[in-house]
Image (cartoon, rainbow, N blue to C red):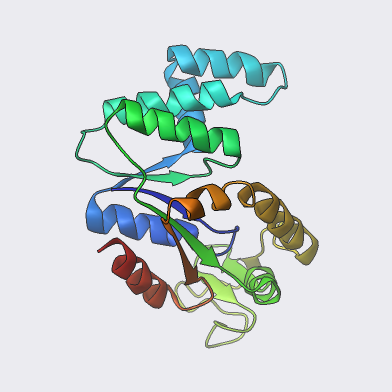
Length: 214
């Protein structure tokens, strides 16, 4: 089973991808992670990518395609993949189709976690963590039992990610829509797109995904 999981930052895509990995033995293929690993390992494609990045340029679709091909070749043929961060353009979608076809694979599902932008802004901008143990909290949905004291370790210092602010979140949403708009019609035409309410609780989203891929 090969899946593209779509959703803007904060939609819970990472959590759901991890659950798919744990439940079904799928492998999550994140282009960013693969690039870093290839560069570190010094593979032929990694060295090529490093030269491009060192020059301050964007890694080409050809290099990313080669990375994905390498990763699939290293996997067992009966292990499925979750594609994360790829494809983002129509040419990349065409490239992925070729990569899969060349290896006797096909794309089975494209699952998008739909979100309400205002609610997502509230979800992301309200989150913070204990600076000592990392336990997560939220201004509205999950506050410490004793204000100012971490439930887990008793710490009194908390921190927020600097990019968890409204302007950044809305920019990310706009970028996501711009990047997914070109590829969704391609997969809609193939009848493999499903939409899930990404604002539901995590277990409900997981159950909806399981129903789609069953």
